[in-house]
Amino acid sequence: MFTSRPCKQYQIKVSKVLSVKQFQNIQPTKEKIKIPQADKVDRIIQYPIMISQGYDTAEKMMSIFDFTNRQRSYYRKSK
Image (cartoon, rainbow, N blue to C red; front, side, top):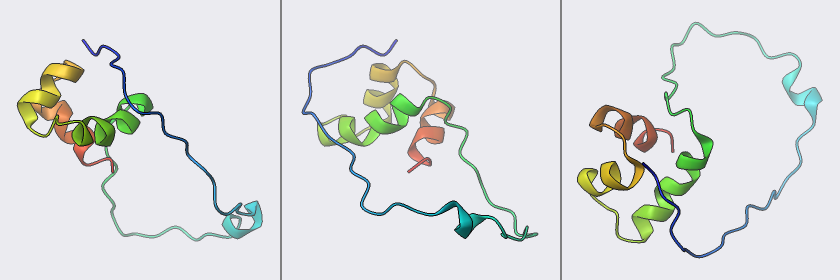
């Protein structure tokens, strides 16, 4: 199971506010895209932070987040 560890604090700053009008007339596309199956936003955010703190192998990530190799790939692909 994932346990919280002391780490540096980070802030996410929005550099540009987008208008809803930009997204009102978007046409669908037939192009298939891959959507990552990572479903826990906190883990998506923590993943690169943990890499920067030395958790840089599949085994280390699986031990800290307590998930399977298949789940690990979901978060790795959710960049």
